[in-house]
Image (tube, rainbow, N blue to C red; front, side, top):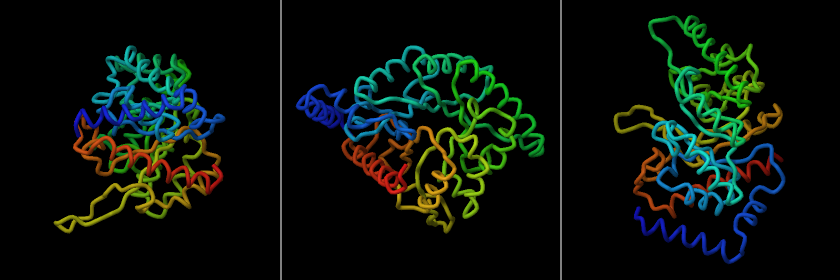
Amino acid sequence: MTMQSRRNFIKKSLAGAAAIGMAGSVWAGEMLGPETKRPIHVFTKCLQFLSYEEMAEVLAKHGFAGADLTVRPGGQVLPENVEMDLPKAVKALRNLGIDSKMITTSVNNPEDKFTRPILKTMAELGIRYYRTGYIDYDNSKSIPDNLEAHKTTFEKLEKLNREYGVTGNYQNHSGRRVGGPVWDLYELLKDLNPEHIGVQYDVRHATVEGGVSWPLGLQLLAPWIRTTDIKDFVWEKNEKGEWKIKNVPLGEGMVDFKTYLELYKSLGIEGPVSIHYEYDLGGAEHGSRNPEMPLGEISEWLKKDLNFLKNQFREFSL
């Protein structure tokens, strides 16, 4: 990717906006319309090579309702700069009629020096939801002992979130960390207020871990689900004959969107939705600041998955 290609894309976007006049107001009306209960965001890890203004242009062009901003080490907004930079990012978005109702953080320690500044700043900007950081199991302890220890952390986060009027959501991520098997999240959350601590439900990771039983976990966690994220995958064998996970565009993998959205609707799950782009985007999917794929091509993949999810939402009257 070259700086020139990026500038050309942004220039064309701006030219189109100028042609219709009042770009922010028009895009806001087209994208957002009446307040939606499930605004579709893009997880901005794949756009970290852009400035805040350039990112906003891309999202406005395609009709995303919001940006799930990365506010963490290596993200678009660094924790040490959150009080200065998060308002800049949100301003760039809102200037074009886009919002940010959710951010992704590494917050998992109430006593960390950056925890309060992040929560305070997002609250002042009207951002209600944040994704927490992950928590590991201590292999020297039993699973029950681990859960007992982690309950204290979740309780402290709930109390802190209540103080700032925000909600922290832990993502169920496949693997051997807390939240891989979703039943452990129920044990950690069952006595806590979902208005301040809950789950960012990920159907892709739930399918990886749950096979065909994942709907049970979704039903179990439903009262605590306040945000969701969307992506797709397949299992495939590598050259060594080992089964590995491969991320793919929405609708091309193993996620059963029909069953998921039927349950999602019947359980009354609402809140911001974040599309994650984790398949090959020339390194952008890993947060590269200099991806090999041109911005125009990345932009088309963003559009493709957004259209898929919008069509699914329309089909299920969401």
